Length: 413
Image (tube, one colour):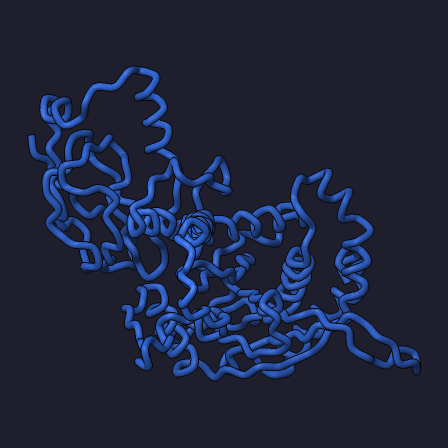
């Protein structure tokens, strides 16, 4: 019996998707719920499970094509006799071993690399949760394989010209010079990158965006973190970073200045009675902003644990659509990449975004004395249609005060 493989209903805000990659080819045996292909939207990568067990009979839509909900993209032959003929019988113990390997968890980005380089999951040890194979695992395997191949290559003859030492240009093959020719490589923009570009342009075009700056002395937070980090990690089984301090301080400031937590909808101002804080994280496909729902009700341990999970799932392209939609305020940390100062762009329809930066020792004056302190620049970009300059400055000052004296958060000051 032939079964049509269709694109499932897409999330409400998504009209179409790109068929990013096929993980099965015609003639291959598949099991029910095996991932047949990856669907890339402008927000997340979705997996397309097999509707039944059988043999993939025909692929109707190639990888890279745009598809819509309900579109037939392949046909699956599900009769048991064909499957039995196509798949030679194996001893029970071998079948179990193969099944465990074939079903080895791997993220969409990792699966795409596996397919491109004709690798099997059993060749790679996954470093993700429950042995999940990450993109970094595949890249590390390829690098190791390249070094092994080079080591096993025959030695050059005596008249061979020694290779030139590597330079910065060698690391960018798309612009490297080969026999005097400058090479280029053109690749289509991913849907996520295109969506990011669209939203950033819309933010600059449709908002009256301004940025105000301040700096915060991070020594009190660093001292507190150093004093309790070991006990915190032992008790809560998660590391104590800086983000929990910033999230808690931000929520306290939003409660004092509700306009910063509001948004504009047409001619209306929507004041949100909840605090859903977006945390910008880097992923192989670009920047994504998973949301901490009801951040005012989360403990420091809850915040740190969820942010760590977001980071791991983002690297594995495993974030769900519901995890990256919504949000009333965003925090982005360019400091992890070494940024000393920047002006973050709004994440519409939100009215403000907080930018964290690199902690750097600088000379400042305290009590008439010049001392070196670990300082961080803070940047608050805001929509001037919604937020006055006075509110923006006071909001940022409230965050600074809370971080420089964390006891204020405990006392509600």
